Image (cartoon, rainbow, N blue to C red; front, side, top):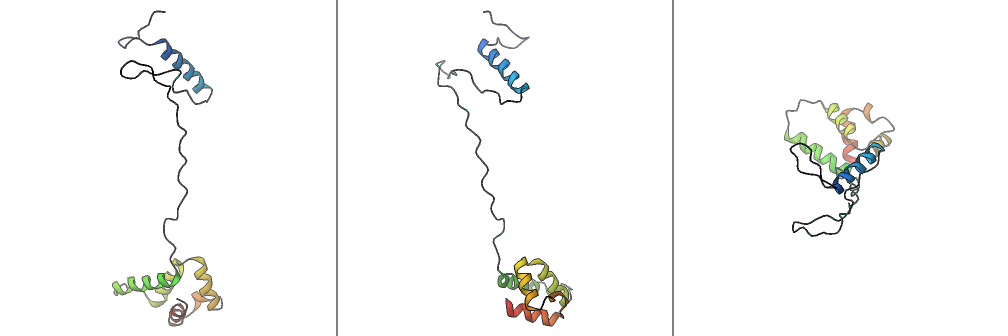
Length: 135
């Protein structure tokens, strides 16, 4: 069978043409095209074993982005940040509310239970003392 040429391109191998036609049909049908149909040639022109596609590796399992921080550590870090910026301009009640909104749910529940479900309605010095006792 004579090789055909397409314009200025090199002549096509009949096996390559056959594979291209099969791949086009598979793509139209929504299937994965094949990678090779027979042995491939190495640089020396000798046939090697066919290339077998490897299945894609699954993504790694999700990990926690941030480590779990306990309430006492969070309170100490928060106080440290406030001490580093003494001119923050926040009122005492605002400092407590910001901490309360930033901690994990179980710690918020513990503070609410300790204050009889009214931590956010407590006066700032009493709320500060309660956090100091729990943490």
